[in-house]
Length: 279
Image 1: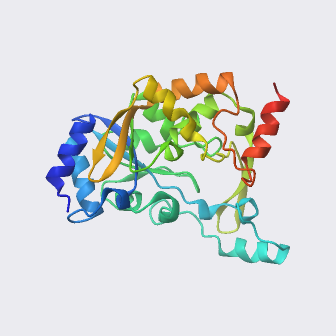
Image 2: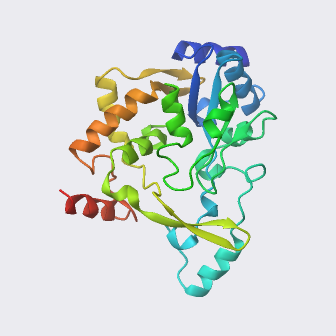
């Protein structure tokens, strides 16, 4: 069973230290048993980063989007209306992160007394620490993972991305690269619930990330990854600016470079057609 002291040691061995600002994508299951659970990992981050450091996590709420755009949409108009009626209204102080995709850790961070959360009905982030307000304030509704987003603010701070027991497919900063590379498919729109009986069309909806693992060999070859273990979880630490710059260069050479190859994917085959049409 992993203790707080052991996790602090692991975080420091990964390359994090006092004053760092880091976005963590985390699988607690991959880490193994932690004495005290997720709260212990939060304390380990606080001790490692110190009073001047900041931890940010994704607290996405995909269940607040229009069911018509889901991977498995309702089959009939009546089913669609019934499901729309069940969609909750986003409350940054109360709406839980979608644990099915985000895991347990982001929700524990969101509930910290000093946590700040960006206001977006689907793509929000929570942060604790010195830069929490800066990272989460004034998040844009359109292109929520692009310019002025928490990801772009992390880029301004030259922060880190830490993948704990997960791969690059969870690295949301690669969506920032897609926006800045202006890939054709990034302009997709989606309808979101914005109030009790209010819906709005958001521009710049993030697409599938299952193909993001394609950048991993390039990052390793360029020695941009610091790898190690947090508990039992194989982990990678990287400077977000370096990763985003490499991804932009990759996408400028091939706009479909980070799309997945699954023919059943509801997004990537269409995205490939958009990209091919603009070559």
